[in-house]
Amino acid sequence: MNLKESPGSTIIRRHPPEVLLDVDIKHAEESLGLVEQKLEEHHKKTLTNKERVLTSLAAGAMAGAIAKTVIAPLDRTKINFQIQNKKFTFREAFQFLIKSYRSAGILSWWRGNSATMARVVPYASIQYAAHEQWKQVLQVETIAQKKSYPGRSFIAGSLAGVTSSTCTYPLDLARARMAVTHKDKYTTLAHVFLKIWKEEGAFTLYRGFSPTVLGVIPYSGTSFFTYETLKRLHYEYTQRNEPNPAERLMFGALAGLLGQTSSYPLDIVRRRMQTAVVTGRSYRTIKSTLSIVLKEEGVVGGLYKGLSMNWVKGPICVGISFTAFDLLQKFFRWLQIFRNR
Image 1 (spheres, rainbow, N blue to C red):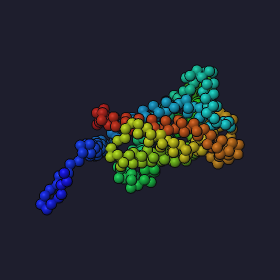
Image 2 (spheres, helix red, strand yellow; image 1 turned 135 degrees about the vertical axis):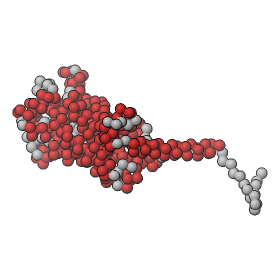
Image 3 (cartoon, rainbow, N blue to C red; image 1 turned 180 degrees about the horizontal axis):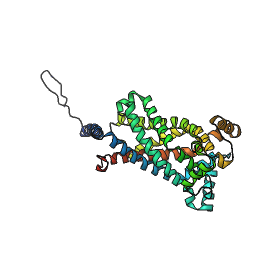
Image 4 (cartoon, one colour; image 1 turned 30 degrees about the vertical axis):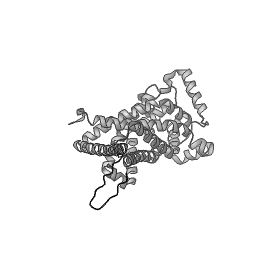
């Protein structure tokens, strides 16, 4: 039967139940997202700055330790190729791991991991806490601020990396030395510092620091900027305040991929300068090291040697690190143990 609308009459149009259900679900999700965001913002306001720093330090330390332990064998393999004039292939990398296993056992894959932990725990702890503080200083904490000032988000990430690198660089040098030498040369982390101090001088502990700082600016800036931007775009598209763990892993993986690619040549320079005494080569300045590597090994086989390995381990490491930090920080901020300290 056809109904015609006449003056003074009212036509009631009914939507199918499934359409109404979809609309209700959509409205519920949007409302839930807004509620979660408001609760999160309210909770942040109830935390003092000291409590925010403490929770960031704790979450960053644990996130860095978890991520680096997972990819430690791949990291050691990459460093071994970075410091040698030897072509990198996945087959050669696999053979290196097999050879290490046969000669010194499976724990050799984690040789130097104690030094890695001694560096990564304070490095990641300081980096994440510094990033939270730099975001506050540069006023890029909220979604609206990140959208309005993307350049500041990049600067906040870069400054976080510079801050943590400056504080922990000697530990990074010690880790590199232990990763490429036999255990007889450096028995412990303390032994590395004592031997370097006695035989090479205190300034050697910061050998290769310049390329590290130059490299961490694009690396840390790109990584944090990419991750924060992807989370912002996720919220704008889904209206969900928080990505789920799988989404966080994907965002972190992409951030790590872009960050490490942007700074990789300076990572090569840093490793060569750090291990010059061990390898018997003379790498004194950034310019001379770049010149030697380019002349002897070229761009792809030299400055980007092992990058394909980084494309495997980097996204895994950064993805795990960002995800673990976000979840642990959120958990710690709900614990009373971090209150009123």
